[in-house]
Length: 509
Ligand code: ADP
Image (cartoon, protein in one colour):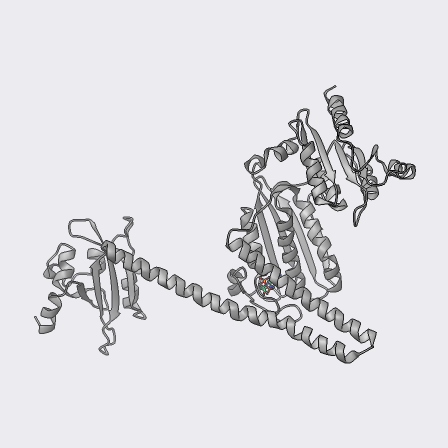
């Protein structure tokens, strides 16, 4: 026994020299004792098959997966880990260990393994080490985030500043000013989008993003997104094909957030598809899930980048214009919003210039799971005796207060704040009576009434105009638009109640 070996035998730590083949060529007393042996028992034996043959959960530990073996075979990265070694008596001993090469110039150098039993303080130390590593990683990402963000915010700011200078120089030339103004509006639009996305990501991350579920048809959300993007698609000379089943796919979802998801995916499809390309949006459904697929014929995504596109700040290729724009947070937000709905989103591509497909999958849970009882009743096919009331007013407070006043055990109310929303609600909610404000921006009450009267197969509701205008002419106008009643604001609540009781009575009778 050499002097050195004698010294090693006095150490508290287990120390083994392991050959390139994994055989113990030296084992100190502490190492052997910890595992129930004397050093001579282990010398010349395979370390793995003698003391490291099973994992902590009792499953066999294949030698190829063993980090000690891997470290021996290549790279010789030092490793510290918590693991179990097996005692001669058959029980597991939890240890932390490190393995390091003995650099003595040999072609197949040996390694030294040091280990100690993992006591509670030892475990805490390794947990602290793990936490420190995680914090360092988080810090690294944050620094990277700030750098990328500063860069992305500066990008649109530079042309805006140039624009101001150009306007100053343009003096009284209105054409030049108009051109610069359009450019500035575009750049500021990009800034606003960026900041909104960032705020939304922050909201999701801190758990402040609230998903407000309501009964919606998936098709109406996809249609809304395609309408928002129609102009962009036209400008980019892209053809859009929309394939959706006629039967509405009803689900409880946050309409605003899902439209945002679909908008984002459409916007990307447009951004990453050259002029003349095709974008196909397909909605399908099976028993438990609905799927919305956005398939484009654009620049595609390289196979090795597919896994990364949903990561924060992932920008894996160039846009259709050959530029690199955007912060790489849109898809991350898409994934988070879809996951908040219990769904998932995936990306596929055959490769660069072979187009991309993004598929959003949303669960169709039994509506009971989420819905507040009032909406659930409204959705049930058979709502015994309940009168369904839709209140439409662009004044949100007015609509909400009337709706609350009208809600009762025998009535189910729903609110819409503009004409478009009202028409969607009539299709989905099938109200018995609609209180409809006349003066609304966009589609006004008369137009809504006419459109409702032309809707096929909905079981026509009673239409009540609720308006500030009460002259004979106004009443005549609302009658020709299809209203059954005309009430002036503020309407006498007892009149409204009478109308509703009449309806309930007619149903019961
Ligand atoms: P960005 O703002 O950069 O578009 P996203 O998070 O929306 O950020 O997308 C991340 C990256 O994924 C993009 O930079 C782009 O490289 C890639 N990508 C997203 N959508 C598509 C698509 N339809 N076709 C090809 N690449 C895409």
